[in-house]
Image 1: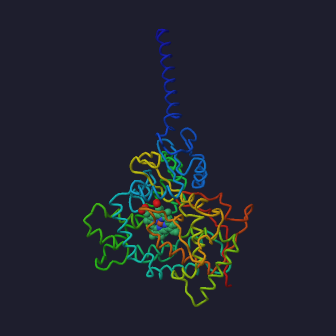
Image 2: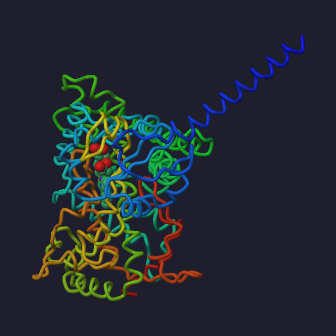
Image 3: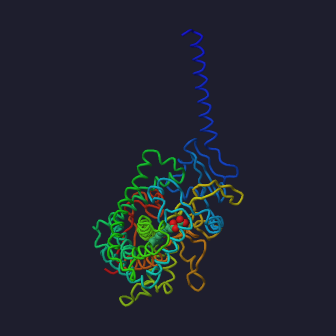
Length: 509
Ligand code: HEM
């Protein structure tokens, strides 16, 4: 090659390198972080990673801090993905109730597309079909006794077996104790879904359900955090593995549910449905909408009952123990009320006692305020470009509903940082309701298990604290487990560390 050609070549190489460099810099530093006009304000973070490294293990707390700086509606962009976090009651009400049809999709990332298969009640996008299915499930669950006295007997039976199985004397709130609570909660769902409880804690079907949802809520937590920030991060190897473990666990659970459905089909009595699966099969056969009640959809709907009911009661009881362990005065008032109303051994624990036990009821409400099981609900998404207040939110944006921020907002609560059940009692000592307490979400996507959950939590709580007192296990450097929450992390639910640092102590040795 002539020397001039070599020079020209080298100039071209340099120019193309320079262009690539300039384009990359523009892409990473200008194009990617660029937000649409009128997008809600929020931090920008680092190039490419955006805010990923500043969200931490407790995103709901981080978002609350950011809201002080940027306002009640905050937004950020990572990669190509937009996330908007709503941090005040007014904005939440407006978005997911008033504009509920627009704000009620689920995000399209692999956790929802692969894990929940964008199907069933919890994973489907908002649509007419979704509403038909949800309304049908709601009606059936009502018929099967959700929130009614007919449901009380099985819930009570499970609660009494649970406290019996925990033993006497000093009982560590370890993983075995937690598994027993899961077993009791799972049995209530199994009775509704299959018409029978699991035979024992070694039962494969029970363990598979626990494993599947454990992956979803606990192991999936880092993946969920990443997905909230930017689904693109799920392509990083560790996060992808975490996301895929969600899918694997739920696939196995689904396989066993399909088997149950087949068994139900073989002996189905169309005039006499016994449980949720029977009702779904009958609806499938008589419904004109064959595309909606597919076999897969039915299995997903059953799966969702376990998803909703397995962890939530357990977590509420764990948080109750953590809070009460450090509050002897509140425990004393609680036990005084329990002993006054449930004069041993005559009065049986029951949901009807709620009115006679306002303090107990108020403690549960305060636990749900301070420690919401799902502080950002289940992520929502918008299905079209939407103008919200003065902001514009692009189609597909993930919407996080920060009920934790509402529960700790001094505009709605006096001294929100304090644990004070009395805030839920009026001058006559009766329980007050307030719209600002929303652990079950609000609007068209709110929890469909709420009525059962309220009954279950009340009865389990009462049975547990009638029998036990709860004391903290002093830990090195941390005398108050309620405060030492660095080890917690939030995915969809808040996961406490493995062994809860409290001990249950029988009240009547
Ligand atoms: C203390 C107990 C419970 C709490 C705190 C709770 C809370 C929640 C929350 C925050 C959501 C998400 C709402 C949203 O995305 O806007 C939800 C959804 C759901 N829950 Fe619950 N839940 C509880 C118990 C239950 C039980 C016992 C069941 C089933 C029997 C259940 C079934 C469901 C289902 C199927 C959904 C999905 C609804 C949808 O996407 O349309 N939950 N729950």
